[in-house]
Each structure stands twice: as C-alpha cells, then as structure tokens.
Length: 416
Image 1 (cartoon, rainbow, N blue to C red):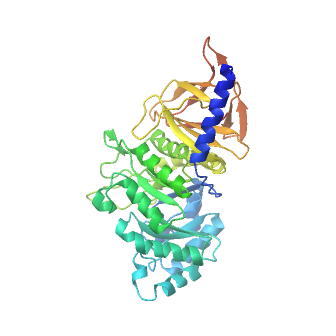
Image 2 (tube, rainbow, N blue to C red):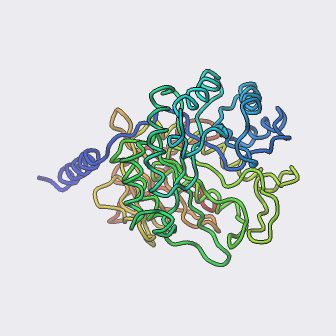
Image 3 (cartoon, rainbow, N blue to C red):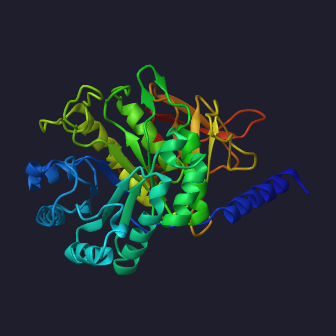
C-alpha cells in the first residue's frame, strides 16, 4: 500500500475508533449562556433584564438575594418573556431535603403547577455544591420533576475537583461525579471551577474538564461549566483574555453551556471582599460588561453551531497542561507552530470534521502556523457567518500550512 493510502486508512480508522468510544450527547438546545447572582428583587425590571440580554445572556439565573416567592418569580418570568430570555427559578419550597417532609410530592406538585406552563421557564434550581449524602433526596426530586414536567430541567451545580473528600462525601472527585450520575440521574452536569488566583493559576482546570467530559459522555448527558469572573478573596481581577480563555477551552472540550460567577456583585464583606462582577452592587456596569458582551457574541454563534456536532476529542499542542492529552497521530492537523494551543475536534452528521483552535496564551496574541494533512481549509467568520478559504503555504519536506492570528485566549473554528 502506498504511503498516502496508508495514512488515509489510519486517519479513517482513528476517527472511527474515536466515534465508537464517544457516546453522542446531542443536546439539541441553544448553547447556554447564563450567570450566577442575578439582579436583586428591587432591580427586577424590564430595563435590567434588557441589560442582561444585551450582554449576550440567554438564560436568567437566580437572584443574588436567593429564592423568590411565587409572585416575584412569576413577575420575573413575565419580564423575561417580554425581553426574550428564559429563566432558572429558585422557590423557597424547593429545598434539597423536601423528600424527607410529609406530603413532599404534593408540595412539589404545587411548585410545578405554579411555573411549568410559563413560556419563559427553563428550569428549577435545587442545590449548589451538594455532598454525596444529599444525592438520594436530590435523586427523588429530579425523578419526580422529570415525570411531572419533562420539558424543564432540575438544575444542580457540583463542586470542582479541588474540593476536599469531606466536602465531596466520596474518596475521589471522579467517584463524586459517577455517584451523582448514578443516584441523581441529572439532565445536565454542571460544576464550578475558578482558575486565576493572585499570582498563580490552578493547575487542574483541564483535568477537571476531562473527568466531567468523560463521565458526561459515558452517561450520554451534556455538561456546562461555571467559570470565574468576580474578584474575591484570593481570586484576581481578570483580563478579557482570561475570560475568553476559560470560555473557549470549555467549548473545545465539548461543553454545552457557560455560566459566569458573577453577574451582580455581592455586597462587601471582610472575608471575601467581592468586587468587579459584571454589574456592581450599586448597579453600575464594570469594564467586564463590555468584555463579556464581546465574548458572548462570538460564543453564542460558535456554541450554537457546535451543539449540532459530535465532540470527538480535545487535545493540546506545545506545553501539555495537567490532565491534557497531546495531539495524536493521524488527525487532519499534523502540527501547529507559534504557541501553545488547545484543539477540540468535532464531526457533523455527514462526516465532515471541524476543529476549535484556542490560543492558550491569555496575555498575548499569537500567529499560528497550522500544518494540514489535506489541502483545503476554511475558517468560520463569526461576523459574516460565512466560511472563508485560506491561502496555503508549502515548505520543502513538510505538509501545507496556513496562518491564523488569535487574540489572547481567543479561538477560531476550522472546517477540515
């Protein structure tokens, strides 16, 4: 067999293998862009939620003040419906331990009756960062909501991998995720991870991503990530590049949604001293509003497109981060020069392959030389919504390549 034919066969076999080990988690939904800590009750107005939508969000989340009563939740849902948003609501009747109370199903029936027919409802918030000991009750709640209101999700957010075994209630983080899936049977996996501390970065961002990606694939359910934005405690104020870096790397790993921590800045306290959310405690926009707006504009387009594809794998070239995997042989991209990069591979129903290329440098722009196994390459222009062919270059004894410049933490979608 000639070398070219052998290479083609290896490529086909590789992607067939990857396809076999991947369980398709086609979400069939708009890419989720939401936040933690929404406007307080007194700011539940059309103007405020038009501002939320203006920043590129499509799901309004629970208020910074916590659960609303029925009347205030319905007012929020009415406002969201007018603005073109959907909501995940929190109701004081929805507690994790509800199944331990008398007539808990009757109480849950009332909650579902109150909200389920509203066109702006997206789901019900149940709990943040549960211990494994909470899972049996949460499983009963999720199961009952699935039965009585299958159109809306029961939302629970999990710890990151740097939580202690005592917080998790399991010896390891993977066991925590596996037990949650087995006992609770959620419609979506969600976890939070805050990377950027004063003077250093947490090292397990990609290790955590990979564990959740692998377990969500096995279970056939989508996952989303709550990323850092708020300056608080040991966490530093972020640049636009650091914000984009988090979002695009999650996207490359196959996430179906992103949530920002936080939208509204919590009130000051002597321990965490929160500041620089998207909106201040007093209600003013910070510089992050425009930064997030710009990132969300592109992410919404790319996320909606990628949600219709099958995520095949996520790899790294250059410095391989903890939990990351190097770019394997036989994929359509043979090498990348110009900096460290993340490559998320996807496939559509017709068999065409795509790659989300992410600049791992969140401080500097980079010009990459992308070496290809074929002689056709297109990049997606999010401004025009069109695919653009690129000029290819050839170096003696090497594959063809094209050049692409990416801003700090930025990304580009390739059609291979």
